[in-house]
Image (cartoon, rainbow, N blue to C red; front, side):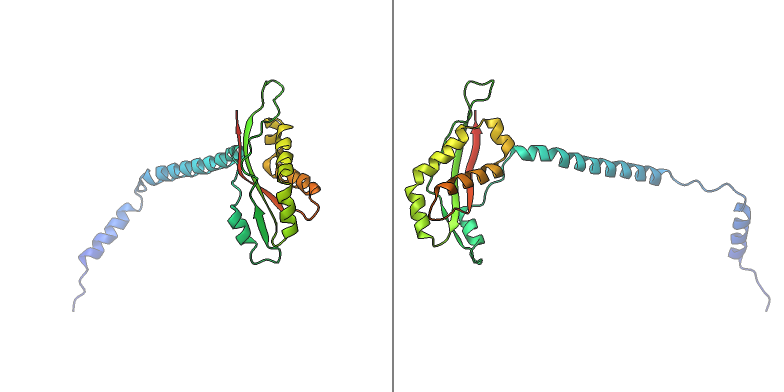
Length: 188
């Protein structure tokens, strides 16, 4: 048997021999362009996200987070040893804030306060019911002695703490645990 050379082997050898010193094959620029575009998009999204987060904090301070509903407060404390009940009979109040230095009149507010106190504390509930007008007056007086800008600068959390302290100073039979606002809005 005679050895026969495979015609394809010869062609392959010729191809490689001819192309050894040939110029490198030019690749398409498309993958490079796409990777640059992709990097620009990623940088754009990241920087937009950072800016959104940074500026959103300022915007967040202008909006209040709603307090939980009375039922949520009661349910949240159901399993714990310190069960609470709520007192929400104060109703909606509309105090006018102290005028700003360059203003003639203050801003009208709409506030609907309510608070929680230990569950089953009947003497405290009766005292709160009897001192309903006094508690309203404390809240009303607080807002009328501060300007809108002072109240905004103080913050709702601090206002609630200060009002809780002032109300508790007037109570003899017990203490309220926390003050909430269903509504807390300024109107010009």
